[in-house]
Image (tube, rainbow, N blue to C red; front, side, top):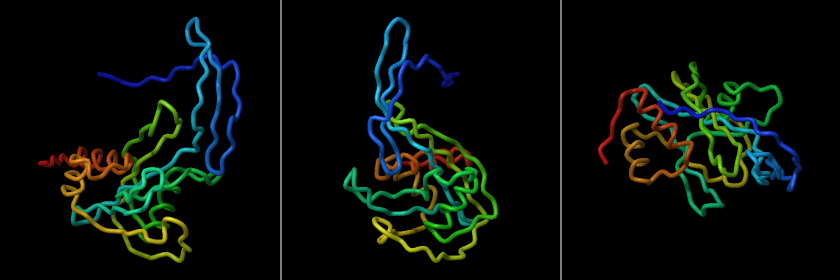
Length: 189
């Protein structure tokens, strides 16, 4: 069975090539066998994503504009692990509430993945939220969140959209696949 494994090659030099608001670009030289290689990558704090499932078997998706890809994407609630001392579960609970106004009585780890391992060290931890209650929120939305759309879709419909490449957000796709697998769901495309 294939399984990723950690590796620790000797880093000879590491510097911040670009300091950004949320993430930095790191330039590192490291020994790889007999070679010394230089690589630049995005140093990311990591993130959580939440797939919320209601008692009707529907999942909560957000439609949000993403400028780098010039598209409105259907996504799951997600956000950075950027609050000092905050656990992943607490971050998932916070993001679910901030973006949707829902609280979950049950929040459980589902899976995790690297978003772009060839140029980014971001890991997204996906949680499954169930036993939901809409409590609303009083947050001031800004930027691309101003026209955020929140909608429930059947898991079958969401899975079909991923399989037809109609949903391209990696966190949404992985979350939908993981939940469908857990529930033994298959979709016809």
